[in-house]
Image (cartoon, rainbow, N blue to C red; front, side, top):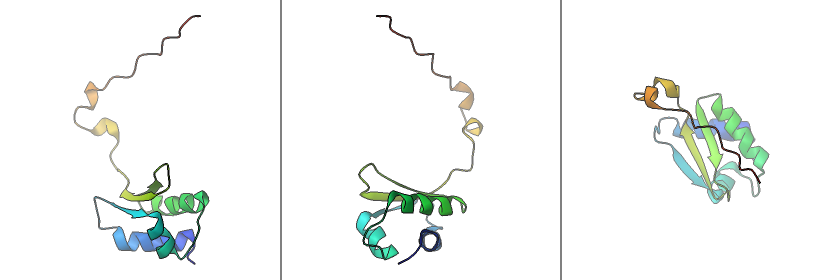
Length: 96
């Protein structure tokens, strides 16, 4: 059974060159990590370890697919057209 740190290191080594990222199924994570069951904390710990290396690891709401991807390195305001982005107007409160 691999720890979250060991599994994160393995994932990074296998997929660091996949710039578009990959996804794994629940069964993939169980098989590759050597765990029959895993907790939300295990996934959070994997994400933490990968974030230190510039990658993210998140799941969908049903925890069926797990997404491994490179974290962006460019701030949104440095994107072309960022000066055309406006903030949302304040919410209007309805009076009873």
